[in-house]
Image 1: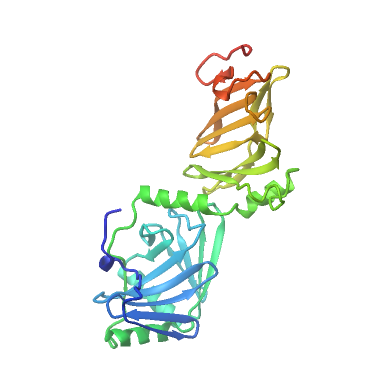
Image 2: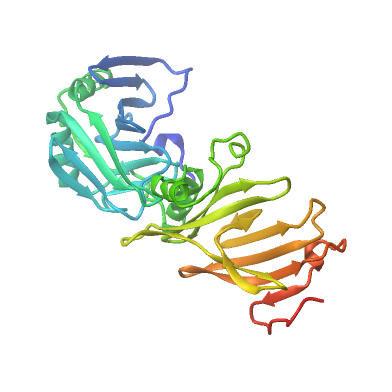
Length: 346
């Protein structure tokens, strides 16, 4: 995103060095600075809702500061004021600014004017959205004290009597790449969604995640496509191995959750499938797993996978069943994508 000076940004970072005036009205608080302008704010369950006005601006900016998991930047926000619904379409009606979690209402003049009028006359704002992990979210905000807060702020700014307007931010909405980056960071910073955690707890014999052995082993989370997230949740801890169960969460319109199965090989039984992988590493759409036969790591199996469209493709599988002092890079390759499979390791 291009550089912007603080004076051009329609949000406020008040410096302790600046003279400030603060006040509160019912559930709202308001802060004004002679140099930065005024901000009236109220907190919801995990989001701050605010109206900001900088010195010399034509109107108030309607702002939401969301916390992880953030709203999906490609989906609408639904605002309900005492039951009256307004749907803000992604990008045109609302957007992130580039600062993680911070977003503003956009839309046209009539939409913003109607929204500002409804906010001042309402008692409660409800915001509904689908977050970046595919979960529905609902935020509630009291509107008691908003109108008094705006009037007090306008007194401090010397603009009482001017028509009260709602403005859109001056800077452009974040581009598609930046929105994607914000989404990815929020996914990876968020906790495991309830639906994934429930599947893990109900359908597996894994150790409890809050047990003494497991509590320090974090789950692995990676966005593998525009509409899919992979969760690798630790299952069992041993001396030098941690097993993981892997889940694929679809976040698109249809949605869905799958427990993933992966190929495994042994010289005795050949190929079979498993829903447990050892010592997993996730990096974007790439997954690797290494099962160690003993602590020095000179026997076991090592597999690499790449996520394509809707599933993981096996890229390479190596196995060393006898511990011969060779590290994984030197283990016999049983399968490599695009090459004829070997009949047996040597």
